[in-house]
Amino acid sequence: MDNSGLTAPQRWADRAAKELEKLQEDAEDADKEFSFREMWREDAIRDRLIALIGEKCWYCETRFVRSPYHVDHYRPKSVVVGEAERRGYWWLAYDPANYRLACHHCNSGGARYGNKSAGPGKGARFPLLGQRASEGESLDGELPVLLDPVVAEDAELVGFDRQGHARRRPEQPYSDDEVARDLCRVDETVRMLALNSDLLIESRSSLIDRVVGLVQLYLTSRGNAGVALYARTEIDGLTQTTAEWSAAAAAAERLALLAHDRPGDDTPPGGEAEGEVAIGANRGTEPPAAAGEGNHVDLRTLVAAFPPEAFSAGGIALTGQGKRGPAKATLLEDGRIICFQRPLNTPMSAARMATGDDHVDGWAFWSLTVDGTTRTLSDLRDSLIAQAD
Image (cartoon, rainbow, N blue to C red):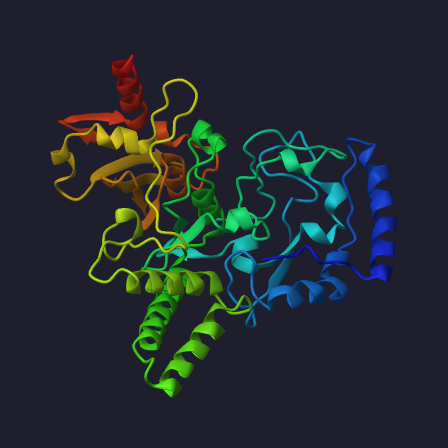
């Protein structure tokens, strides 16, 4: 979603400049709380944000139909959750480039996984991989964990499986910062914004099936101009950027076209099992295990060291104990973890989804039993590293 041309009306911008001057004065007193005039709620800004891609959430792409929506500050304006010693990005409070339209579920929570709450939403959560910028410093050096819907490189990381789950596209490699911290930015974004809540995956799955069917109809109806025109018009309407869940629809169209271009080849992109197809623009495979500093072992490397019979039941049970009580998940042979029936790529995101704790160490949290011995993933990783030495 391109917001590069977004500008504020001059009269609004003049008022915002005066408000920013007041904030700069307040910032000189480290003990003084900021007081913001909520000008971002005004029609002058709201209408320009809506004009970019319509009345839908920039994070989950759900339409605002009789539901509240928020003009979210991508970089939180007053505080950052978990960093009591630091203030938020107050100097961006009146910068339209920092605004994102967000539904209530993405911004404030309320989504569910079955009978479980999916958490509080984005709010003032804004973790980074690295150092946080201060006033006057360039933001280019920051690497937010939370994917930004206006950054094309971030959008390219996200794909969808046939069941409607948002997930990291398998051909996209992890960054060095993700490897070093055992995090997957896509998984963390999906977790924090509940992008795989029950209603979303159900809606996306139905949409993906519809688009695939329309593409097949279009490709097999070249001799019937009326049918082909109908199918093409429907596809175009579902994949235009103003449409609800258009990213999933566009990905489904690409998948159907890829399948058509591979007659007799039923292998999905990435070699994934049928029904768990990762939908993306390119035909690629999961990147090889990334190497961090020193002897790094990621989850796929660890799983590869297990005896094949360990997965004879389809997966290995993972258990943990968090603030919410006992937690359960399933470790698959391909290195993914299923938690709340959702696929995740790292122990960190799985543990944080299970516990609601943004800081839990997933490697130390999860335990499993192999060959009659129960050990944590951390212990198993340390053993594998010791063997390599």
